[in-house]
Length: 218
Image (cartoon, rainbow, N blue to C red; front, top):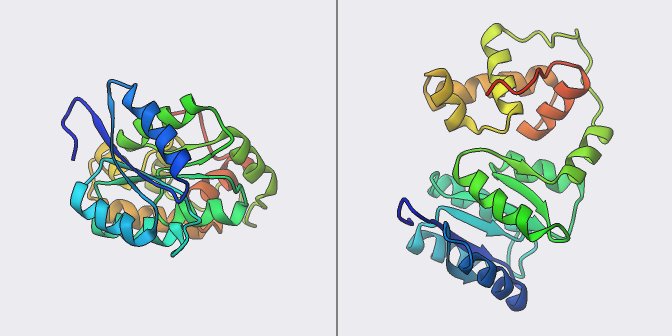
């Protein structure tokens, strides 16, 4: 992994020119360090294991594999490596799959470079970033699950929901609440089940539409 002063970044993308341009942009940032480029899923798995990057930028459409599946596998093998999905596709199903796989961000390649760089920093801190236009479409397309306005959540589940809404992942939520990651994930599963959601992002979208999300607790 990179030292405390820099965030090491591995870029996984089949387009050489795009990867090099992103690499040059990273080189101009004092707190970010480009450590490698993988063109395929197989290369991504190998380089991720060798370089142990802090953050991995992943294109979900690789020539030899499903990038989301590769991201999920890396997260299982290397839970300290965060994955940010950067894609030209903005299909809602892809967003849901990415968040279910544990991605720390989902951004469009058509977005601003500054947004990508900030997403890498946010991912390293343990929070999630989703492009505002993608999130807006998800909010419009998500149908709230049937049930009482309160969602039947316990007080602790509600605490977890509020922290999920602020973009924190399971580890960060667990630290904030002083509980184990295993216990936190149990609460998150309960929240998703009660809201009828399949991912953290979808749960937050449903809760927002139902008026369950309060101002950022941070």
